[in-house]
Amino acid sequence: VSYNLALAVMMILILLALPWAVLGLNKDLGTAKSKNATLSDIFKMDNPNLNLLSLARLFLFASRDFWFEVPLPFFLRSPSCEGLGTTFCGDDGSVCTDGAVCDPIAQVCGNPNTGGGCGGLAMDRVIVGAFLGGYIILYGQVQSWTPQLVTGPLDQTPPNKLTEVFWGVINCAPTLVGFCVLQYSDMFDNYDKDAMTVMLVVVIITFAVIFAINSSIHSFLVVNYASKDKVAVSVGFYYMS
View 1 (spheres, rainbow, N blue to C red):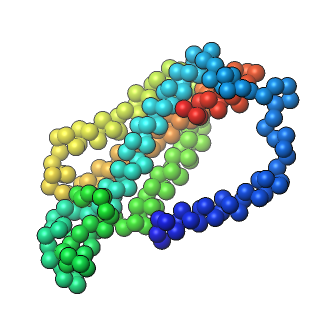
View 2: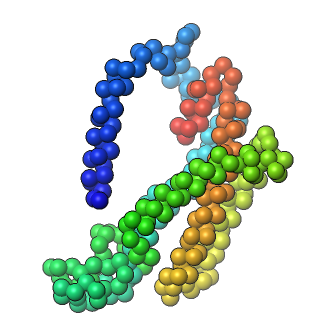
View 3: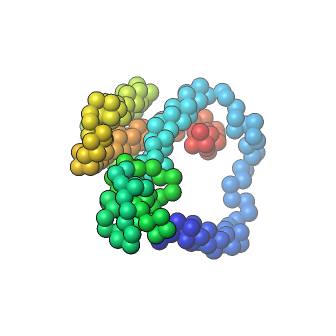
């Protein structure tokens, strides 16, 4: 399935839903009974706890999206650097390394992903999509189970700012381990695919679990810190960050 086709299908589904939204929803939906919030009300910085939590959210999600959104899929898909642009393949793509394809014009092994680099795990597109989708499912499940399985048994319910600081520090552990492996191990220099795969899966799954716990605590704190007379505005400001 091509990327462009997937985008086109998504746009079509959105367009099909628009008439229902325009004709089926009440025009007074989302309108305050007394007074609608103005732009100045939304950006009114009179809640320091909420402001700091919103700033923390910015860095929390950046710690994931910085590598998860683009670099990780490219690394999982990119082939080995060995033989790219040099190995003659003619019409036989089987001589190319995993993930590489035979360029029918130049007749040498090349990268199927333009600008995607090399030295990755050369995984199939379906496997990469399933892996990333599984990460999102795991994240959502752990987030919903956090009160019952984590903060509850640890007597951290209801969580407070110290609870978030505690789990925020723990959230640094998986990426620190990953950094140490990259810095001091030769698995990437020697292109040890098995060791690279195990390391990435362990680090990513551990990060997903701890990240989900942090996100769950954030979800409670934002409602707890929200101004009682304008909860929707306060929560909206938080998620906007």
